[in-house]
Image 1 (cartoon, one colour):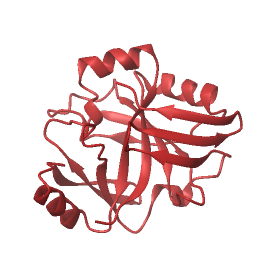
Image 2: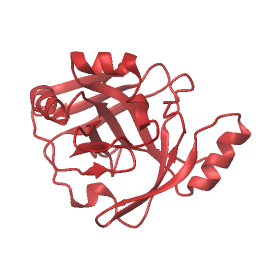
Image 3: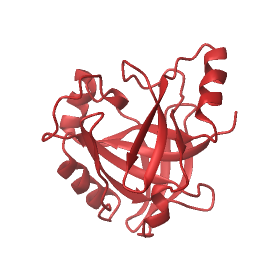
Image 4: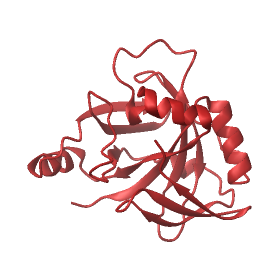
Length: 194
């Protein structure tokens, strides 16, 4: 099955805390993002594309206090009390998302391997259209070291993002999620939390 790293997910108790973390740790202010009505979350985005990982970005995500309850479990375990306690101590890397050319085929392949990665859900924001695999329980596939799967339409978020000098140097999901980034503050390593 073909898949590529699409984006890293940094969770935060509030979006403001996530922006402050990005400025402090990575030395840049993330660009705008948007709201996810389906999940009651909102985000900010940062282009981290590099030669080894083209069209790659970092997403800072938090529960949107102004959004109504989504009526379903939020993605990336954001409703789990244990993760919320971790995020109350400060933002951190919580998961990763991989893009695939055909989401239905990828999910069928994983089902054949005994992995429930969820069902495809259509989503859009402005010119962006995507299909993402969502589990009803919102659980990250951490024990399996597997990402959330996404299939993009023609446009990708990085197409319109400036290069702010942060680039992904290395990424490993086999022995616990880790990412190395070149930043204006020097090399930074992020490791999964919660």
